Image (spheres, rainbow over the protein chains, first blue to last red):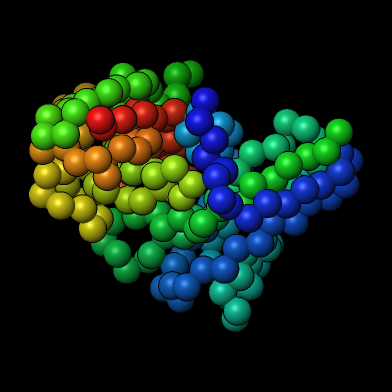
Length: 114
Length: 114
């Protein structure tokens, strides 16, 4: 299928290493953040989320860190595997929008080198 | 359990035509949102529907419209198609409209305008 990763920032990581994907957000009114993984030809797949009253949340092999002071979000993937190769998007929800609207970042393409 | 399902998967139209895209949410989810994803970019919010009412609208022209049915499925309509409407159209569902819970996406409809 067509690649969603055209002209996106790319992170190349050796298999087994840890990956860190960063995201800057701009809306200080955002109260909820989600990381999605998108493989070629597919829709975004939920990975992990975090609410604005937290600064860290862990899942299976993934950790999300939130720094509200500098409006920065990061996704850490432990022991990166070839199946982790995809485009990763951070998304934020505005608490004052009156509806559930996600604003997505530009995306980062993760390439895992076997 | 079935995830979000969208139909058709691919569609080719010409300028000026009209198109209808369909979405069935995850069972039990009452909110449906539509996003447009242009190649190389993150998804952009178009509409949110909950209990058959529009709850949010993004910055899209009136050529875009949608509706939600009593079974919570939804249709997105686009009239007077332009070349710039070529994109992946994604549907996402969530349990309710105002809670901090993740939206889950379908694999989208790839719309190509000739």
